[in-house]
Length: 235
Image 1 (cartoon, rainbow, N blue to C red):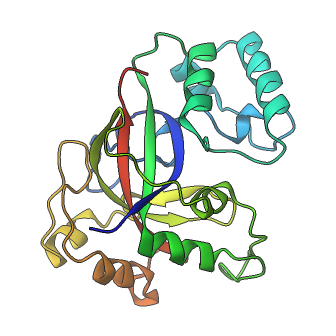
Image 2: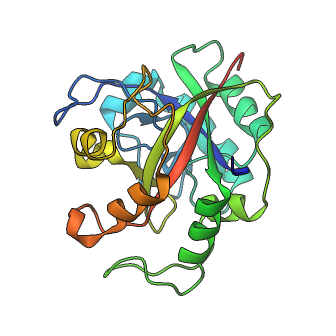
Protein backbone atom coordinates (compact mmCIF):
# COMPACT_ATOMS: atom_id res chain seq x y z
CA UNK A 1 0.00 0.00 0.00
CA UNK A 2 1.46 3.33 -1.07
CA UNK A 3 1.71 6.31 1.24
CA UNK A 4 -0.99 8.89 0.48
CA UNK A 5 -0.35 12.65 0.61
CA UNK A 6 -2.85 15.45 1.16
CA UNK A 7 -3.86 17.33 -2.00
CA UNK A 8 -6.45 19.54 -0.29
CA UNK A 9 -9.82 19.87 1.41
CA UNK A 10 -12.90 20.88 -0.57
CA UNK A 11 -16.22 22.31 0.56
CA UNK A 12 -18.88 20.61 -1.55
CA UNK A 13 -22.65 20.56 -1.94
CA UNK A 14 -23.65 17.46 -3.85
CA UNK A 15 -26.03 17.58 -6.79
CA UNK A 16 -27.26 14.82 -9.13
CA UNK A 17 -25.60 14.49 -12.52
CA UNK A 18 -27.64 16.12 -15.27
CA UNK A 19 -26.13 14.40 -18.32
CA UNK A 20 -24.87 11.14 -19.76
CA UNK A 21 -25.37 7.49 -18.84
CA UNK A 22 -25.16 8.31 -15.11
CA UNK A 23 -27.85 11.00 -15.14
CA UNK A 24 -29.44 11.61 -11.69
CA UNK A 25 -26.60 9.75 -9.97
CA UNK A 26 -24.89 11.54 -7.05
CA UNK A 27 -21.09 11.32 -7.06
CA UNK A 28 -18.91 12.28 -4.11
CA UNK A 29 -16.18 13.87 -6.19
CA UNK A 30 -14.31 16.98 -5.03
CA UNK A 31 -14.43 18.71 -8.41
CA UNK A 32 -16.60 21.77 -9.01
CA UNK A 33 -17.76 20.70 -12.47
CA UNK A 34 -20.19 18.06 -11.15
CA UNK A 35 -20.97 19.36 -7.67
CA UNK A 36 -21.32 22.86 -6.25
CA UNK A 37 -18.17 24.23 -4.67
CA UNK A 38 -18.95 26.28 -1.56
CA UNK A 39 -15.40 27.64 -1.61
CA UNK A 40 -13.92 28.49 -4.98
CA UNK A 41 -12.58 31.36 -7.07
CA UNK A 42 -15.92 33.18 -6.75
CA UNK A 43 -15.04 33.73 -3.05
CA UNK A 44 -12.41 36.28 -4.13
CA UNK A 45 -13.82 39.73 -4.89
CA UNK A 46 -11.32 40.31 -7.70
CA UNK A 47 -11.67 36.94 -9.45
CA UNK A 48 -13.25 36.77 -12.90
CA UNK A 49 -15.36 33.77 -11.90
CA UNK A 50 -18.61 34.70 -10.16
CA UNK A 51 -21.21 32.59 -8.38
CA UNK A 52 -24.09 31.94 -10.79
CA UNK A 53 -27.71 32.36 -9.76
CA UNK A 54 -28.50 28.64 -9.51
CA UNK A 55 -25.53 27.91 -7.26
CA UNK A 56 -26.20 31.03 -5.19
CA UNK A 57 -29.72 29.78 -4.57
CA UNK A 58 -28.51 26.24 -3.81
CA UNK A 59 -25.99 27.58 -1.29
CA UNK A 60 -28.68 29.88 0.16
CA UNK A 61 -26.40 32.91 0.13
CA UNK A 62 -27.44 36.57 0.11
CA UNK A 63 -25.45 39.38 -1.52
CA UNK A 64 -24.47 40.56 1.96
CA UNK A 65 -23.16 37.09 2.89
CA UNK A 66 -21.19 36.87 -0.35
CA UNK A 67 -19.64 40.24 0.41
CA UNK A 68 -18.54 38.91 3.83
CA UNK A 69 -17.06 35.84 2.13
CA UNK A 70 -15.17 38.12 -0.27
CA UNK A 71 -13.67 40.13 2.59
CA UNK A 72 -12.62 37.01 4.51
CA UNK A 73 -11.10 35.30 1.46
CA UNK A 74 -9.36 38.45 0.17
CA UNK A 75 -7.67 38.80 3.56
CA UNK A 76 -6.37 35.21 3.49
CA UNK A 77 -5.55 34.42 -0.14
CA UNK A 78 -3.62 36.27 -2.82
CA UNK A 79 -4.06 33.66 -5.59
CA UNK A 80 -6.99 31.80 -7.11
CA UNK A 81 -8.53 29.17 -4.84
CA UNK A 82 -10.67 26.05 -5.13
CA UNK A 83 -9.81 24.27 -1.89
CA UNK A 84 -8.04 24.51 1.46
CA UNK A 85 -4.52 23.43 2.35
CA UNK A 86 -5.44 22.43 5.89
CA UNK A 87 -8.49 21.16 7.72
CA UNK A 88 -8.48 23.86 10.39
CA UNK A 89 -9.03 26.64 7.84
CA UNK A 90 -11.72 24.61 6.05
CA UNK A 91 -13.60 24.12 9.32
CA UNK A 92 -13.19 27.81 10.23
CA UNK A 93 -14.69 28.90 6.90
CA UNK A 94 -17.57 26.43 7.13
CA UNK A 95 -18.36 27.49 10.70
CA UNK A 96 -18.35 31.16 9.69
CA UNK A 97 -20.47 30.97 6.56
CA UNK A 98 -22.27 27.61 6.48
CA UNK A 99 -22.71 26.88 10.16
CA UNK A 100 -25.08 23.95 10.86
CA UNK A 101 -25.43 23.24 7.12
CA UNK A 102 -25.39 19.42 6.94
CA UNK A 103 -25.81 19.50 3.16
CA UNK A 104 -22.36 21.04 2.71
CA UNK A 105 -19.53 18.57 3.26
CA UNK A 106 -15.79 18.86 3.75
CA UNK A 107 -14.10 16.30 1.52
CA UNK A 108 -10.43 15.39 1.63
CA UNK A 109 -8.39 14.51 -1.45
CA UNK A 110 -5.24 12.38 -1.23
CA UNK A 111 -2.79 11.18 -3.86
CA UNK A 112 -0.75 7.98 -3.59
CA UNK A 113 2.98 8.67 -3.80
CA UNK A 114 3.20 7.64 -7.47
CA UNK A 115 0.50 10.09 -8.56
CA UNK A 116 1.76 12.86 -6.27
CA UNK A 117 5.20 12.65 -7.89
CA UNK A 118 3.66 12.57 -11.36
CA UNK A 119 1.59 15.71 -10.75
CA UNK A 120 4.50 17.58 -9.19
CA UNK A 121 6.57 16.83 -12.28
CA UNK A 122 3.77 17.39 -14.83
CA UNK A 123 2.95 20.83 -13.40
CA UNK A 124 6.51 21.98 -12.93
CA UNK A 125 7.02 25.56 -14.07
CA UNK A 126 7.16 25.80 -17.85
CA UNK A 127 5.84 22.33 -18.56
CA UNK A 128 3.23 22.11 -21.31
CA UNK A 129 -0.27 21.05 -20.20
CA UNK A 130 -2.16 21.32 -23.47
CA UNK A 131 -2.03 23.32 -26.69
CA UNK A 132 -3.44 26.40 -24.96
CA UNK A 133 -1.88 26.48 -21.49
CA UNK A 134 1.49 26.34 -19.77
CA UNK A 135 2.18 25.89 -16.07
CA UNK A 136 3.77 28.31 -13.67
CA UNK A 137 4.24 25.68 -10.95
CA UNK A 138 2.11 27.62 -8.46
CA UNK A 139 -1.21 25.76 -8.46
CA UNK A 140 -2.46 24.99 -4.97
CA UNK A 141 -2.86 21.25 -5.43
CA UNK A 142 0.80 20.95 -6.49
CA UNK A 143 2.03 23.09 -3.59
CA UNK A 144 0.02 20.95 -1.16
CA UNK A 145 1.45 17.69 -2.52
CA UNK A 146 4.97 19.09 -2.32
CA UNK A 147 4.52 19.42 1.45
CA UNK A 148 4.26 15.59 1.66
CA UNK A 149 1.59 15.69 4.40
CA UNK A 150 0.90 12.00 5.04
CA UNK A 151 -2.70 10.86 5.47
CA UNK A 152 -3.50 10.17 9.11
CA UNK A 153 -5.26 6.84 9.48
CA UNK A 154 -6.50 7.78 12.97
CA UNK A 155 -8.09 11.02 11.78
CA UNK A 156 -11.78 11.95 11.78
CA UNK A 157 -12.00 11.21 8.06
CA UNK A 158 -14.06 8.45 6.51
CA UNK A 159 -12.85 6.69 3.37
CA UNK A 160 -15.39 7.12 0.55
CA UNK A 161 -13.54 5.64 -2.41
CA UNK A 162 -11.15 6.28 -5.27
CA UNK A 163 -11.60 8.70 -8.15
CA UNK A 164 -9.65 9.38 -11.35
CA UNK A 165 -9.27 13.11 -11.95
CA UNK A 166 -7.97 15.23 -14.82
CA UNK A 167 -6.25 18.39 -13.57
CA UNK A 168 -6.44 21.79 -15.28
CA UNK A 169 -3.61 24.34 -15.36
CA UNK A 170 -5.35 26.43 -12.66
CA UNK A 171 -5.59 23.49 -10.24
CA UNK A 172 -9.27 22.72 -10.78
CA UNK A 173 -10.07 19.22 -11.97
CA UNK A 174 -12.58 16.89 -13.57
CA UNK A 175 -13.71 13.44 -12.47
CA UNK A 176 -13.81 10.69 -15.09
CA UNK A 177 -17.60 11.12 -14.89
CA UNK A 178 -17.25 14.37 -16.84
CA UNK A 179 -16.32 12.31 -19.91
CA UNK A 180 -19.26 9.91 -19.53
CA UNK A 181 -16.99 6.83 -19.51
CA UNK A 182 -18.20 4.99 -16.40
CA UNK A 183 -19.41 1.97 -18.39
CA UNK A 184 -16.17 1.86 -20.36
CA UNK A 185 -14.02 1.86 -17.23
CA UNK A 186 -16.13 -0.60 -15.25
CA UNK A 187 -16.34 -3.07 -18.15
CA UNK A 188 -12.79 -2.72 -19.44
CA UNK A 189 -11.10 -2.89 -16.03
CA UNK A 190 -13.58 -4.97 -14.03
CA UNK A 191 -14.48 -2.15 -11.63
CA UNK A 192 -17.59 -1.53 -9.55
CA UNK A 193 -18.75 1.83 -8.22
CA UNK A 194 -19.93 2.06 -4.62
CA UNK A 195 -22.77 4.03 -2.99
CA UNK A 196 -20.64 7.20 -3.24
CA UNK A 197 -20.12 6.75 -6.99
CA UNK A 198 -16.44 5.97 -6.40
CA UNK A 199 -14.34 2.79 -6.40
CA UNK A 200 -13.76 0.86 -3.16
CA UNK A 201 -10.78 -0.93 -4.62
CA UNK A 202 -8.67 -0.53 -7.77
CA UNK A 203 -6.20 -3.31 -8.49
CA UNK A 204 -4.57 -1.75 -11.55
CA UNK A 205 -4.44 2.07 -11.20
CA UNK A 206 -1.33 2.37 -13.40
CA UNK A 207 -3.06 0.64 -16.29
CA UNK A 208 -6.18 2.79 -15.94
CA UNK A 209 -4.15 5.99 -15.64
CA UNK A 210 -2.27 5.08 -18.82
CA UNK A 211 -5.58 4.46 -20.59
CA UNK A 212 -7.04 7.81 -19.49
CA UNK A 213 -3.90 9.65 -20.57
CA UNK A 214 -3.78 7.97 -23.97
CA UNK A 215 -4.89 10.39 -26.73
CA UNK A 216 -6.72 7.46 -28.36
CA UNK A 217 -9.15 7.48 -25.42
CA UNK A 218 -10.52 10.81 -26.73
CA UNK A 219 -10.83 12.41 -23.28
CA UNK A 220 -10.10 16.03 -22.50
CA UNK A 221 -6.36 16.63 -23.07
CA UNK A 222 -5.50 16.75 -19.37
CA UNK A 223 -3.17 14.69 -17.17
CA UNK A 224 -5.21 12.16 -15.17
CA UNK A 225 -4.38 10.90 -11.69
CA UNK A 226 -5.59 8.29 -9.20
CA UNK A 227 -6.89 9.87 -5.98
CA UNK A 228 -8.56 8.91 -2.71
CA UNK A 229 -11.62 10.81 -1.42
CA UNK A 230 -12.53 11.09 2.27
CA UNK A 231 -15.34 12.76 4.18
CA UNK A 232 -14.60 14.77 7.32
CA UNK A 233 -17.12 13.77 9.97
CA UNK A 234 -18.50 16.08 12.68
CA UNK A 235 -17.52 19.19 10.73
